[in-house]
Length: 82
Image (cartoon, rainbow, N blue to C red; front, side, top):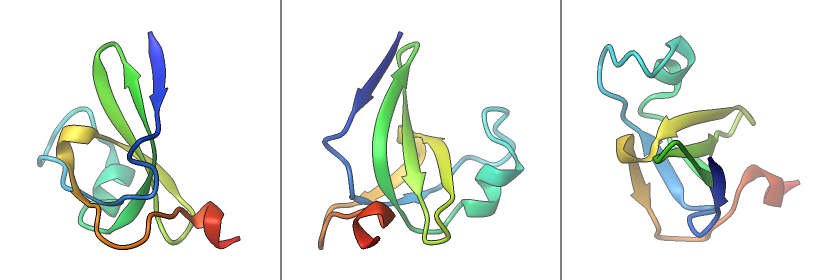
């Protein structure tokens, strides 16, 4: 089952995947530690994945549990800047 949830849309998010986690690829690790913004949270097979957009307009998915969230400041995504 695939469900979308958007209550976190625009929240600052910094992914911190565990080293050598087989759920992540090289692209995930290249954006690790960088701050982006949540576009949405998708639930697939009971796992919550955060769809994070970065300043270079790249979208990368991370397990929500591996993301530090910062709800201070304005909520926005790069779509809001266009």
